[in-house]
Length: 151
Image (tube, rainbow, N blue to C red; front, side, top):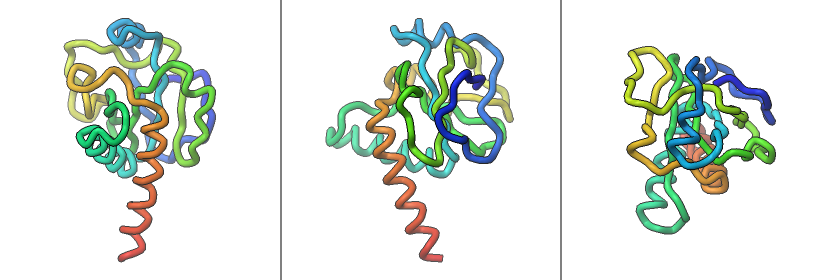
């Protein structure tokens, strides 16, 4: 995604990019243009599982919102409420203002190798709660570290 503000350095790998306006996203979600939290794929996938399990158990408010993947498979992007980038400070991740630019919500399916939806907007909630995401990313990082230390 194009950005005008990044609070932390993104992880190495290809950034999420797309050229169509993001204005449709905010309109279809009933809010302004969402911000985008970008994380390494492995950590993002763990976080998606953690959030979905927690939402299923009703132990945390809210579930996961739309999630993008990049064409190279190195990053995932979580749509979060507008303004999240102003206060996002989680190391190993980046949060950017989309300011209405990026990927459209629509009926078009991404082609193989392109940026596309891991979890499309029509299949999940409008956006991911930033506090829920922060907690899930922290838990995911600890799980990954523990798994890597077992090798």
